[in-house]
Image (cartoon, rainbow, N blue to C red; front, side, top):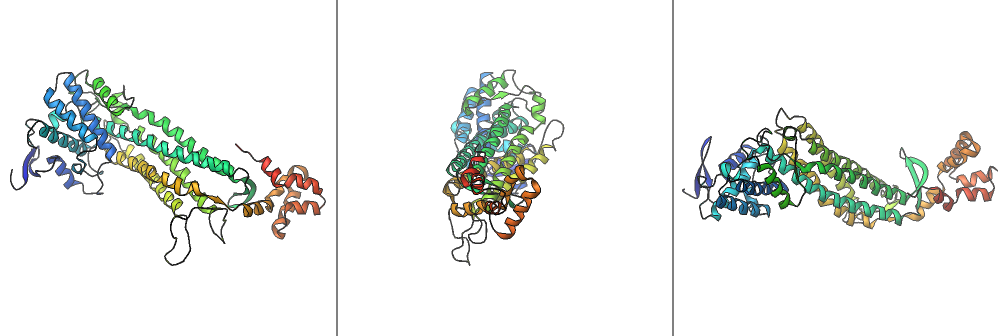
Length: 466
């Protein structure tokens, strides 16, 4: 040791590591090799990894492979990391080579050095507690990284389901609030038969609920873990009782009903469990993006757009045009959705790049899917409370437009035929007069019949209120 450095050795040689660092030589090499994004591994991934290390140590103590004093120090150090400790000592970039070897060794080194401290030894004394021989006992990156990835993605997915269901409930609540508000429907962005504004908002809520149900169901597959498969799924260098014991401890630590995947080769080769969840995130992004687009359209104006609804003003909309207010929250949501969709493309490509016994693209897959969920978990509550909750309606204008909509001639088709109804619709569009007024003038209906067919109450009564 000299000049605030300690010397560490790995199979490639010697390097100086800062004395204060809990990470070691392999982490140092990874930082030098992969200065890509400046973004470290997601905290949930590190949490899950620390839980794996503690569970593995307990299992190895139980089968008699790991010295109890060393094992208990590893368990204590791993728990400190799992509780959020030493986060500045996990600098490995989310983009890295291998199946996450750099991340695995980063975790191993931090836990080993902290365990050394716990036992009263200086950091770097790997002859006493080794990152590989002790912390990584009965493990490989190839089974620990996908295990950490699946646990962390399951945890994040549960959070995402919660916030999406909250937004869905608020949208359905708006549907009830707007149930008796009639508005012009639009297909191809052209006027179509009237709908209820409430029906539109209830449909938004129903779409989100459907996606979350699928997401929740797919996430259950993440609970089948490859832990114990070590390098290629064979379980080499593990005690026969290790896998069951380690997963039992891991289940207790995480509070999740974790299981060993009985198809260990498949568990190592395939990453489609992550692809399935990523696909559900993409489906959610498509629905959210569509809803955001609708809100932007319906709130466009206020004088030259649809101006059917008003979104809460949350910030000035222009640095040059005084008084301008923009739909900034739906715009932000759109951008997040584009990123989630793009991440899904990258994850899908990476899943298909697996070769033989292993997919080495897992670090990118795990971090991208966690970031996708994190963006949505962070923003959707803001979108819910600062945008959707405060939506108001230009009810009088909606009513006027819907009652003067030429598409109301559709109601005449069954009685007078499509061509006659089209004549009325065409005249209504050209003259600006209502279909109701024209059918009375043409003698097609009496005043009473026209009122019964075209009144606001009659139209609302015909609408599907599901």
